[in-house]
Amino acid sequence: MDYTHLGRTGTSVSRIVLGTMNFGDRTTEEDAFAIMDRAHELGVNFFDTANGYGGAGGRGATEEIIGRWFAARPGVRDDIVLATKVHSPMVDPTSDGDVVNARGASAWQVRREAIGSLRRLQTDRIDLYQFHHIDRHISWPELWQSMEVLVARGEVVYAGSSNFAAWNIAQANEIAQQRHFLGLVSEQSLYNLVQRSIELEVIPAALNYGLGILPWSPLAGGLLSGGSSDAKARSAAAAVKSKRDELRDQLDAYDAFARERGWTPASLGLAWLLHQPGVTGPIIGPRTVEQLDTAVAALDIELSAEDLRALDELFPGPGGQAPEAYAW
Image (tube, one colour):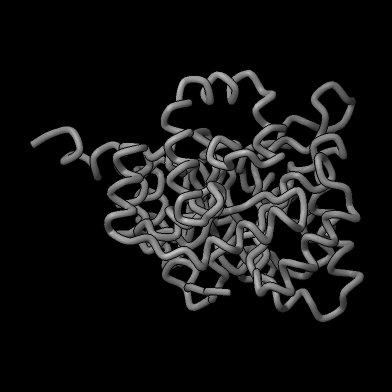
């Protein structure tokens, strides 16, 4: 396994991040345990989840599965850099429960959900607590005050963001600096060969402020997975099927490019991300141990400058960072 620092911190994390969104939904608890066991065996030490994950199992079900895995394996918790998120409403809006404040990132909600995540995960700390989306109704002084309390209590180590614009990152860290607080150390963004818009501003901002980029949907919802079963399952979704039809020629050329070099398309898609500036590691969401092994194989792929140029021609990005990408 290859490791790198999480953004500007001194904490080392694996360059493959185990995403757990399928646990409790498309992946049974037994299979989830097998995937986490294999990840741990391979040296994957960075696990990512969220309070709202669980799908058919219900919100919070994914964190509960991870918590039971920790409980069944004493001593493993300190091997893992554990990341979760806060933002999603955790109460069914149609129920009679208290739902008025149970969403977003107010200090009330952040504290409440940190307690809930710690309980579900059966742990004493969240290593990376991430704002799942920007909450435009909450000020940064309020957000940082809630995080400062959690850090002081030892319940959170680092703060991160997800789906933030570049100016959100800049504002957050400028205000954190004024408060003598570390601020954001990572940003989870949609990033893959098909969707490269974060190269315009988010990646330059992350590099400037020392945030590690954690790409989600690194294989574009299965578009870059070639003929894998996961790709076939996801292609049933109308949006993905439409995109697959739209990009058929590019995807066929991409698959051929990978196979001519003895790589799987899925491994190539992850390897490309690992060669991009600022990327700590792509977040993979394996449903099986085999898919996990395919993802880890990306670490063995060394792309030449010629390979990278060829992939840029197949899937052109925005042309670099703003404003040079569109102005003189």
